Length: 143
Image 1 (tube, rainbow, N blue to C red):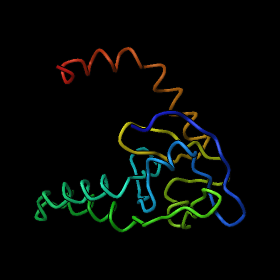
Image 2 (cartoon, rainbow, N blue to C red):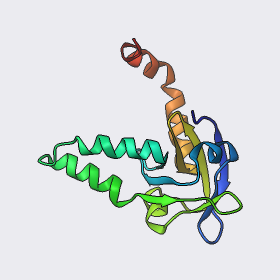
Image 3 (cartoon, rainbow, N blue to C red):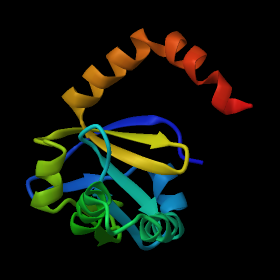
């Protein structure tokens, strides 16, 4: 399970340090792609294969399904860590998440997310304000 919040900055070559707790769980090869809410999603090889399997179930006759599959797969990149525990973010992914320099790297149960720090702070503030209401409205799904 991935959990926690860490702050790091991109270096001049768009490399980002991934926290060691996450590196251990991600394994040697993992995948980064477009996520929801203007962030990047990072998946283990196993989780990414599961996601791809789920995407195959979507009806190719539906325009929204084609758009979603294309958005996820066209932005996906296979990654490995360098000797210092960094990954290189391609410019296209950096642009997708509007990342300039400072990042928030967060654990989200079965995956990791990379956010532009300012976007994460705004999202987290909004989510904190509605935390109790969200919990109440989602209770039926937890039974």
